Length: 273
Image (cartoon, rainbow, N blue to C red; front, side, top):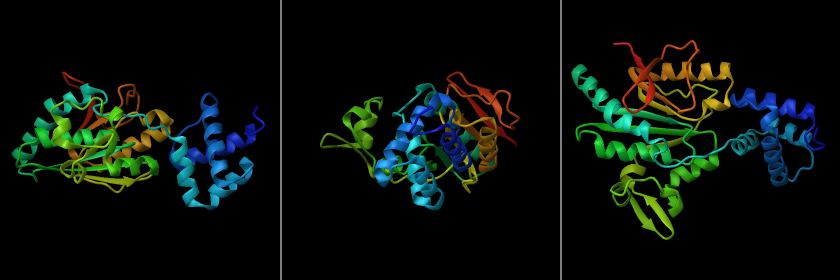
């Protein structure tokens, strides 16, 4: 037992984090929580976790900063290339053909849920600008629990080491070299709306054609996962596609999404017409 974070305090924080965000902390990742708590106590100029626990319960801004600190934000451009191959070769052609056949608005709406520092939504925007028919528009909503990550994402500036993975034709087309990094051009930056969102709650988004929520469900227990997936279902059109992480699965979950195995990657769909 840690003198800094007692078993009793660990349990209180574990329950608070779950109730506030749906994220599950177990004994195996207790050291991560302890490390993040030490950082927040230093920032708040406090000495014990009990006082800090009281603070985040009465201060919504500090609660946001605390939840930000305990999330991990590992991402990169074109992460899991197979997912984007499926987007180009299967999902987009399907949606374009469907909307044309039904006489629907020629626009594709996407939610990048858990977008971290923005590499995923910028990747999607580059693909859409390159591959969508010229008579089709698109809208990308990107959200995260981390305000710090969202600030990086909305600025659209990435150091040289972070742009690894962007195909050579795309880099000069969609980014300007600025100093020791690259700045996203307005033609993709202006197509993404970044916003704070906690997946424990309904986003209010509706009529989405595609949802990306990759490597986020692993932080939730089964009940929280199902709640998130059910809200995704409600947020989608009657003809939509769901991407989750390659190590994640809806297998065994009582969900209405159908398993879809394409030539390139596995994803899920909602087809009601």
